[in-house]
Amino acid sequence: MDNAIALRDVVKEFDGFRAVDSVTLDIPAGGIFGLLGPNGAGKSTTIRMIMDIIRPDSGTISVMGKSSLHNVRHNVGYLPEERGLYKKMKVLDMLEFLGSLTGSSPRDARKESQGWLERLAIGDWAAKKVEELSKGMQQKIQFAAAMLGKPPILILDEPFSGMDPVNQNLFKDTILEINREGTTIVFSTHQMETAERLCKEIALINKGKLVLSGSLAKVKAGFGKNSLLIEYEGDGGFLGTLPGVARVDAYGSYSEVRLDDGANPQDIFRAIAGRLRVSKFEIVAPTLHNIFIEKVGGAPVPALERVGDA
Image (cartoon, rainbow, N blue to C red):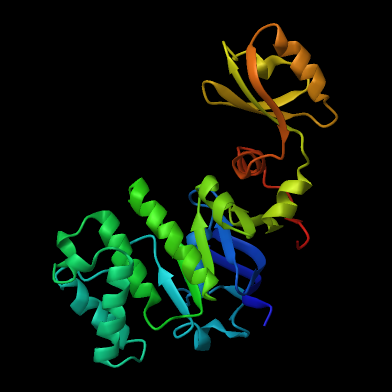
């Protein structure tokens, strides 16, 4: 099986508004796939259709080669952006109940749930009511619930929402571990830095349309090495006015500079050498953040660009 999930010409409308517009997408088995886009792009609607929570108006969706209607329940774990926990229940009791819904015996479900609580560093909270937990802890509980029964596919919708940096790092390590153990990971996010660190394959959705898809390496290579990373002392506010500069993302002591096609980086260096004290000047591939901005930052939605497999 090459693909864990496949969508073909999927359309979904709400009261005449087309939230997902003829999306065709392959999500390879065994990898970490990023479904990216701005808020309201159609990512969560796409995920809900994959999960058979809502049905597409047209098009087809398959999970592990079969119709999602018949195959999704026992093959896909799901962490929704909106938490769906029973707040009055104790954590371990609730996970035991949810685990039993996957077909496990109550005893096996409780043992598996306890293992996940320990793995996610919240074992001491097993006897607490869900409502007593912080948002970050509830996110961990929701993640544990999604993993019960060891589904071969895990879908995470904004998985790092509400988490502090320490727990984000724990979550990241856990995602990488279960992927190494064979689980296909699909996660939806608008946090480009996270996607760039974790994903091998990505798809970018904007205004319901698929505008870019493929391996991250090929996506970045397709945009060329026409970006500069410049670290400096001084006022770099003039960088965006230089000939050959398409856009500047400034971060105080350094800037990421996107060049026009055909612009010569050496011309930029000569233009800034007498005005800034430059400590680093590097020609780099554009970041996923910059690709995201270029593709969806106020411009009309372009035609789909498929970048070949690595």
